[in-house]
Length: 255
Ligand SMILES: CC(=O)CC(=O)SCCNC(=O)CCNC(=O)[C@H](O)C(C)(C)COP(=O)(O)OP(=O)(O)OC[C@H]1O[C@@H](n2cnc3c(N)ncnc32)[C@H](O)[C@@H]1OP(=O)(O)O
Ligand SMILES: NC(=O)C1=CN([C@@H]2O[C@H](COP(=O)(O)OP(=O)(O)OC[C@H]3O[C@@H](n4cnc5c(N)ncnc54)[C@H](O)[C@@H]3O)[C@@H](O)[C@H]2O)C=CC1
Image 1 (tube, rainbow, N blue to C red):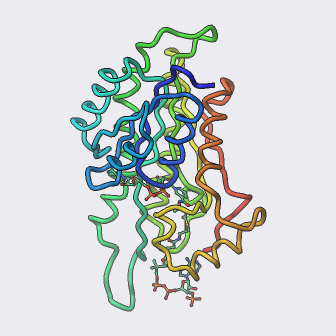
Image 2: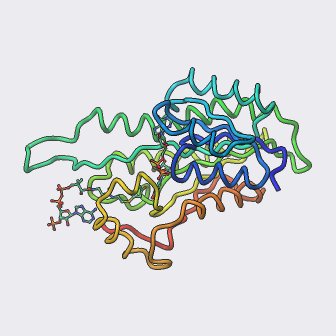
Image 3: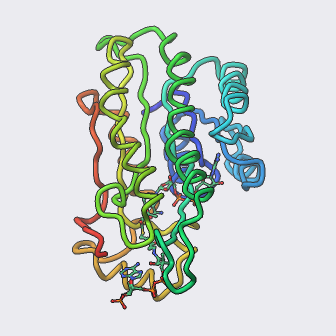
């Protein structure tokens, strides 16, 4: 289905990103995994064997992202799809009255830096490369998929930084889609609910169970492959553009 397609997936060494890498490969695509040098990206690429390369990247670094784009060209000759999955989750109260301590500003800044600015950094640099593709019959040159979170809309206690970073991703989706429309590049954001990944597994199992119980249907954590299937649909459907799609079993998180 995706024969000849070249994708670049940030956060591709783990969780939702890794499932996306596997799905693109399964459909005949070629993929560059971008993830931190400390991630299992190298092993992941080895396990997946063919048509895949790992480039160590911090998404907040211009140099790293440019290097990953150069590797994409050197190895595969083009870039069609970017999927931004790299992200971090932080949790802290705005003011901890028990300890008389405010939210650590550095932690707030880091969350915004990785989740929002990192995503934008990858979009702005990769758009230049995707824009060089010859347009297809519909005028399309490529697709960018971002990952927000339902926390962009209904963040819980402790999620001020995380929710702000993800709301930023939601907020920039339409203007970037409008901006890149002339070049035939679509931009779509997915806002996942709860998915069983290493990020989610940082939470204690009782917290996971109680969150799971709040998902109307299906009352469980999502499988990462279900996220990857939506990425596939977004790539396939040219009318999807400038929108954020919740993928959450109709979950609305409680305070
Ligand atoms: C990854 C994604 O993109 C998807 C998601 O968002 S998954 C959802 C992830 N959610 C989180 O990570 C929640 C983050 N928040 C927390 O972990 C904690 O609130 C915190 C560590 C920031 C604060 O902990 P704390 O100060 O020790 O709070 P604690 O004493 O436990 O609770 C205080 C009150 O808040 C409530 N509360 C705390 N965390 C809660 C939660 N996650 N959900 C509902 N209520 C919560 C408690 O029930 C308690 O209520 P009362 O005041 O009525 O007793
Ligand atoms: N798991 C879930 O329930 C949900 C996840 N999300 C979002 O989905 C995305 C993927 O999350 P998961 O797969 O669950 O998490 P994960 O922790 O399994 O994977 C995230 C990957 O991003 C990488 N990463 C972190 N900072 C980076 C940086 N600066 N540069 C490059 N790579 C970096 C990590 O090394 C890791 O491999 C994140 O943006 C997360 O916020 C959103 C909603 C729900």
